Structure formats: C-alpha cells, structure tokens
Image 1 (cartoon, helix red, strand yellow):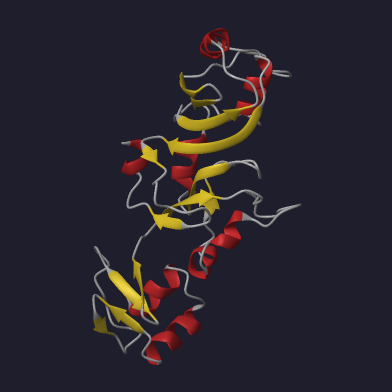
Image 2: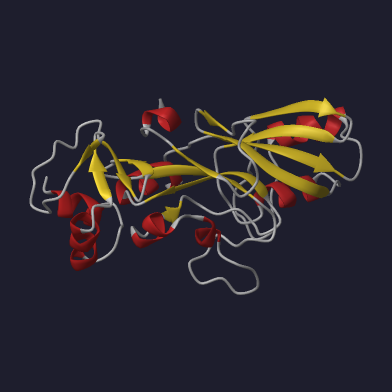
Length: 231
C-alpha cells in the first residue's frame, strides 16, 4: 500500500494532509524514514510513526476503554460528553463506534471498532455474547435473590423472562452477574425485580476479553484481533 494511503486509511487526515506529513519528514514505517508519499509499503505487522508516536496498522481497528462515569455512549450526547471524545483524533477520524452502550453512570469495559460486521456479531440478540458486570448493591444479596436471578425475572414491558447466566457473590453487597442479552438498563431492572437496588455498576468482561487491572478510567488500548473477544 502506498505511504499516503496508509496514513489516510488510519485516520491521519485528508489525502492532501497525509501527503504533507510524509513530505515534512514526519512519517516512518518499520523504523525507516519515508519521504515519498507514493512509496509502496508492506502493511503486514506494520508499526509506523507519526511525529514520533508509534501506531500499529490495522485494516479494521478494535480498541478497548475503561469507561469512566459521566460519559455517554452516543455520537450525539445530550447531557454529558461522548466517550468518543476520549479517543485520539486518528481513531475519531476513522469513525470508531462503541460496541453496544453503557449508561452514563456505568463504568468499565467498552469496545470500539470501525468493523460493522464485528459490531453485528457482538451485539445481535441471537449471537448471545456474554458480558460480566460487577454490581454493587444497596442491600445485602440473599440466596433467594440469587436463585431468582438465575431462574429468570419478568421485566416491565417485556414479554419473556430474562435470566443471568451466572451470579457470583463476591461480598454481601457485591455480585458478578453474567448476561447474554443487552436490554435497556437490564442489570438495574433485574435487581429491582428482586427487591434490591444497584448503587454502582462496572462491566468487567465482554466475551473472553477481561478489563485489564492496569487500564485506568478513561484510558484505551488496542485489541489485536476479534479472537481476543470471541475466541
């Protein structure tokens, strides 16, 4: 692929702007300076730099973020900033989208990609990709409540019961809940249905991918391939 096309495909501006970055000597590929915008470069396992910052080449980008509170998973937020604003400009230019949504007060693992097929694969109701949530509760969880969550509860305005894939008690007031569905406010509504209340909610796993302990709130990291999520 031509050097100019690499930068353009990775979100570094218009073709004219990408050409200018190369002519100004701000682009290296595999550690070597590139001065010709039309130079052909092998993109396999390519790591390039722009202004000294290293970027891996991905035909389709996937990143994870530790979503902080008070950010909306919307391209047109209403009350709080969009999580998109936490991504660097090249990823915003590539128009990465959140994979599903987390409420503005929900934290934890959020995925972004510009791969429409992957978004469908991870979010379609028939695909049943598990998500794990760490749930802090107002009242101590009871064995009966856990049993009911596993058997299924009927939520308001829903025709069929929803149930947890698993419900693990961490402490009296903290559980880890595994869900395959992605209904609106599902965790909060399920706990309300068993006469409890969610006071804090964090997604800690999406498919096979776990939230890294060293990924701070608001920070992001590359996901090398979809297999890290789906196996």
